[in-house]
Length: 109
Image 1 (spheres, rainbow, N blue to C red):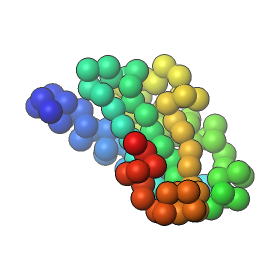
Image 2 (cartoon, helix red, strand yellow):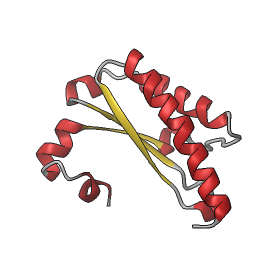
Image 3 (cartoon, rainbow, N blue to C red):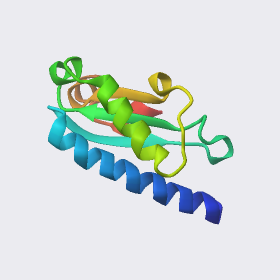
Image 4 (cartoon, helix red, strand yellow):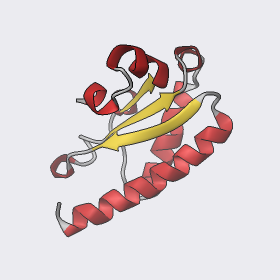
């Protein structure tokens, strides 16, 4: 990873950590989020996954509110998502446990 990529990754992690903390207080069942990116194609390759505790809470989730929060935080560091409906996804701990025995690395690959 290039030095500039490392700086960008740190900035992304910081703003997404802020988004995560805010979401925990305002979105029932929200647990955590993660991101994936190819720095040769940023922001087009940036993908964020928001994880809820159960399928039921995920079904009731304010997905547009979460997408707006992620867009807002990324915009603060001049990263604009071209298609947040595609780039901000959702999943649940419950689904991963049942379908992948709780192995997130396997689930994300």
